[in-house]
Length: 141
Image 1 (cartoon, rainbow, N blue to C red):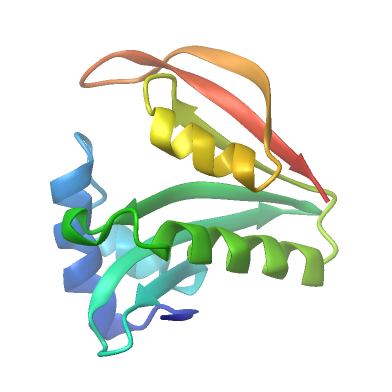
Image 2 (cartoon, rainbow, N blue to C red):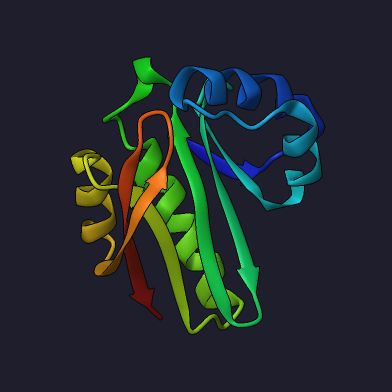
């Protein structure tokens, strides 16, 4: 598996995955503007497995989104993306990394716990379609 920076050629695959995974998917023009902040997980055969959107403000990183192609879930792609995002955060001397996750998304919460993230708050009705709280999680680097 390869984790790499996104390129313009990845936009259609990212947009299709957004539509498949999220009730409020990012449009292609938004993905294009954020391209420099996206990491891609690619199989050994070049297959697109998923992506992570990682951003920062000053010395704080933020994991905005992570999505894995449904047929490739639970095969290590999300773990590899998280590992690389954290590695890059440390390389940039971030103090911490934060993220929001749907309160019902137990698989993602378990992944984040595995990487050392701890719950630090709750954002009531943060998500729409369906309306749901977000758990705010932080990893101190």
